[in-house]
Amino acid sequence: MTNTRFPDGFLWGGAIAANQAEGAWNVGGKGLSVADVATFKANVDVKNYAAHNAISRQVVEEAALDPTDGIYPKRRGIDFYHRYPEDIALFAEMGFKALRISIAWSRIFPNGEEQEPNMEGVEFYIGLLQEMRKHNIEPIVTLSHYEMPLALSLKYNGWVARPVVDCFVRFCNVCFDYFKPYVTYWLTFNEVDSICRHPFTTAGILPDCLTPGKEQQEIYQGLHHQLVASAMVTRDCHAKVPGSKVGCMLTKLTTYPHTCHPKDVELTLIKNLDNYFYADVQVFGEYPRLTLARWQREGIEVQMTPEDLEVLKQHTVDYVSFSYYMSMTESASNDVERTPGNTIVGVKNPYLESTDWGWQIDPVGLKISLIELYDRYRKPLMVVENGMGAKDTVVDGEIHDPYRIAYFKAHFEQMREAINMGVECLGYTSWGPIDIVSASTSQMSKRYGFIYVDQDDLGNGTLDRLRKDSFYWYQDVIRTNGESL
Ligand code: BG6
Image (cartoon, rainbow, N blue to C red; front, top):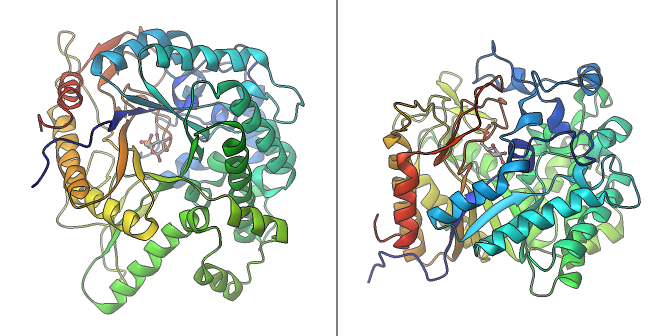
């Protein structure tokens, strides 16, 4: 019989990242992070990721000296740092069982290399976690979500250099020591595959500081350091936090062949394997042979010690989490229309509608992704990001957002079908349950929330929180554990 309800204990909730929500960039001893130099570019097409993500050492150094938050929206966030009790209360009112947050590394280790943590930062997160527990909200904590200390980027070119591994392990151990009374579910690196798409945001790697001709190799070296660090902190978390569950987090860039031409099918296969290989390492504990062979063919030499390979093998993850926003197609032909997705440009699918940002809306793709991931990894899954960036309009203090409700409804129905087919899924946290600053474009006007935040792209507004129509709709879904769908 088909269940209309989700499994008992299903973790319904939402997900945010420190750098997109907290603001308070220079408060409580926090150091600068890579997010604090991301600029809002008003005159650039929102579909032009290359321009939005363009960065150089000179730009970063100049930004680091700017004492204002003017063109740096992530310095402002939505002031979650000061307003979290109100926001958590709103999440509780919606019935949240879980909230995914991240810890800003630069709040705990402002420059990344200190030996002792900044206790004001530690206490901030203890307060936040206690507030969540007060409302029976299960924390899901990401240890690295696009916010490494800027000093490590400038000194080492980020994760390219080995010493950053030790800095990260020290930071994570502080998190385990102080936050273990409150946290069971941990994630190491947000969208671990994203290092190849935006190396600065993900890993503090400045493209103009890479060795000419060795750019790809150095980025993969940075990835290897992250994968090793992830395994090391999985080991430490299991040792320090009894009953803890540590997961990996992948951007699920589900790709279909544009046609049934075997060349399209082959290219699609390669593309999907390339998306999987990051999680493959974290789940299976070793690099896929196909990846190593490709690196060899391309002359990419990644330094790996026997100890690295051992730690990868020994300390694999307990569950697999992923973000899912859209799907794409792949084609061998150049004569095809292209469209943007999550920091990537793919071939347009004629059967799908897109958001105003060009991301193709594909609920069935979520079901396909859940089935593929579960069949491949045989580990519990968690959907830790999903949602639709849209422009909202406030009319007489109300926000009517049927487009958002339609998006979520269709995705939840597909998720339920996957679960009914036997997929083990622990929970679902929508992206940005309250409007926050966009990761890719630093816009405030790209809104994902059930809760509206009165602030524009330039930081004007009261920061008041308003419940959208979708707020009440999601509240009903959670209250009935999906039956109201
Ligand atoms: C994910 C990131 O890739 O997509 C989030 O983990 C991000 O940080 C989300 O916010 C949505 O992307 P954007 O660019 O619309 O904010």
